[in-house]
Length: 288
Image 1 (cartoon, helix red, strand yellow):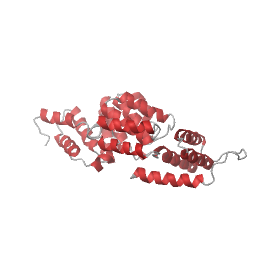
Image 2 (cartoon, rainbow, N blue to C red; image 1 turned 180 degrees about the vertical axis):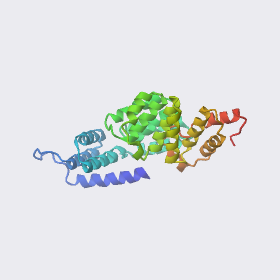
Image 3 (cartoon, rainbow, N blue to C red; image 1 turned 90 degrees about the vertical axis):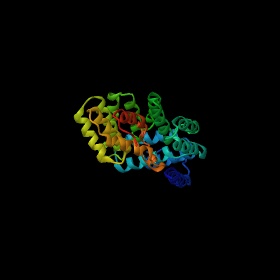
Image 4 (spheres, one colour; image 1 turned 60 degrees about the vertical axis):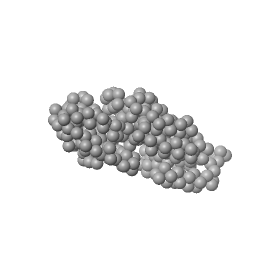
């Protein structure tokens, strides 16, 4: 639904700017940011997404006016997320629907979509996250880094990069990415906080682990991976906490398609059920 709306919005914008098609015969003058937006839309009409994003990104780096930057970034979002091909969108949606049940088939579908639209951000990000879910974190990192060269400020790309680095426990590199994001103001903050819990747990920093866990719980108590990390932190302290373990298992086993899609920004969403069930059985508990 979101993609359909976005496509309609961009199509309308493209049509508006295409009426007085960008003229190559205009006298040289200093381009305004609105000129850049117009040019980007016209390049999108020609399906030249990469060039459109390049000129928008360059304009953002030059701009100092908040309104201009906001409008340029909005255009980047529209241009980068639009599907130019119905077939690629169908393959992408099929891949997304398969992710929970079969990561390999999901990756096959999304990779096929990427062959049609290699610079489409939703496709690239989903492909990278599926690679992370499979454990091929190095490939996931390389996949998303290519797009970050074009749009280095995109938070979805940064988060995916951070997830791939966390998967490889490359914490110094991860930290450099994290430090570029205003996490407390981010709509993606719960996913960042989950990574922070993982980082501090891995680095054996109990105080920071607990601080990050508290932020994660506050950000979204219904986020399934919050239950996992609450259990994992307790487990690292030799505590039982079977309640959170059972909540994680049951939430993941009963998660609806809509709920899964809501949280699928996390490539490891509900992928640790066997780990938790095994621990529960080892404590003579049962994963009901």
